[in-house]
Image 1 (cartoon, one colour):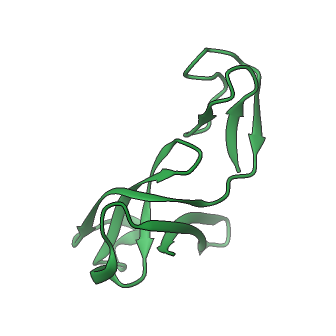
Image 2 (cartoon, one colour):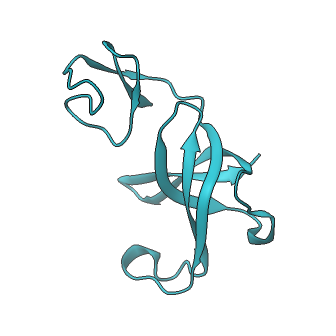
Image 3 (tube, rainbow, N blue to C red):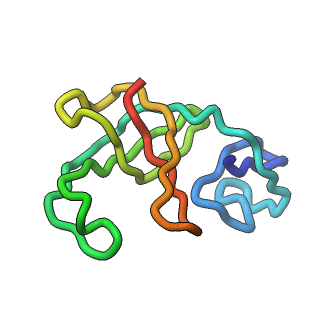
Length: 106
């Protein structure tokens, strides 16, 4: 799910109470197609907290088809990851109460 302004029709990420484009508070949730392209990425070799045991992993900026950019992780073969490659969302449960959207190559 992703927010969309009902006045200017632009998609919004990260979730907010007003549209950052037109400042309307007329916002609703829409189904995202869960696909996009890698804008940029890096491999993380040192991490802390809940991710410290996951290194190395890839963190990336993904441009969703809806027109917003989000910071996320790319899972799968690191050697295949490249800028502009198409990705689709996959959900990973880290704890009982924490599920994060990661992306994998299409």
